[in-house]
Amino acid sequence: MVTTAILGATGLLGRALAPRLLRETSDRLVLLGRRDDALRAMARDLSSQHGEARVESRLADASRVEELVEGLRGCDRVVLALDGARHLRTVAEAALAARVSCIDPLIVPGRLALWRELTERHRERGCWVVTEAGLQPGLPGVLARAALEAMPDARALDVRAVLKIRIPPDLAMPSSMLDLVAAFTETPKIYGGGRAHVAWSALLVPYRVARFSPPFGRYALAVSALPELEALALCHPEIERLRFLVGGFNPVVNGLVLPLLLPLLWVPRRVFHPLVARVLFESLKRFTRPPFGAALAVDARSAAGARWSLELQHDDEYGLTCDALVALLEHVSRVPPAPGMHLMSELPPPRAFLDRLARLGARLSPTG
Image (cartoon, rainbow, N blue to C red; front, side, top):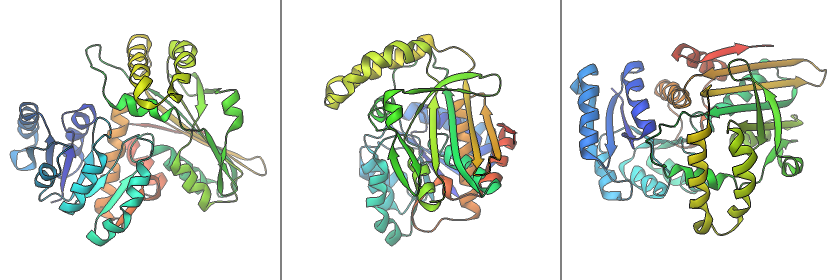
């Protein structure tokens, strides 16, 4: 039996992921976190449904290597369901020391540099890391690869995403909001000819209107850099344009909050980033309206003008993230990755992966 740890088990992602893993896999779970009472209560609840032999809770602070190494003892892999990435290097070092492989669904800019730095040590220790895992990043690359599988002569691909989270009114701002705000400082990029290009037009006109299938409809999307698409473009220099567009913020955020506050992000991070994160979080909590969930689509076009498209929807953004992680964990159980670093979108056969998401509850709609 494979033993999977969830670090940050009592957070939003961990609480959603644990029951899905127990239901869909035969894994034994180790719940890791700092809040002993919450961990024990969560373990009791899950054990009552799935058996005590399959669930264990252990105290482990993400900032303390010794606690993490002890908490990871006997585990095969760990999902980093952390609220932010302040302690990512500490966690990575502890996982290496414990010889435990990692699944990284975080959205923190710059984390790829850390995993690349540690790649040789992972190989020496016989461990792997799958990063860019989950909904976004993760699924955009899977959709793009599915399009290329269906249309090998595609020359232009647009991957679009609208993400709308239902934020509970009593939820305190998670520190991951600071990571999201930091991502706003990244330069928008498009890919083609085997390399990345600055999307200058997106700097001048940030939003493009795109239409999704009901219930989502029309949304203003912004061009964004996405490393998994850059990796794909490097492998397919024949692609002339590969672009990722993402949105889902409400009109108050798009029309008022971001235009007013984004210039503050170019001041040193510790000065205004917490303020921008706070205002953004409260604006999302107060003004976001249904439909909630996620929709992702890919549109491919060949040089001859033929088109192919596919759309994926889910009623719960965290639910789709968890289903992507479940499908990924199932895949790496069947086909263990080689030691080293991998991107999620490069591992599973893309269409089979998407079909698995559909069986887990997503809506998959080929339209071309």
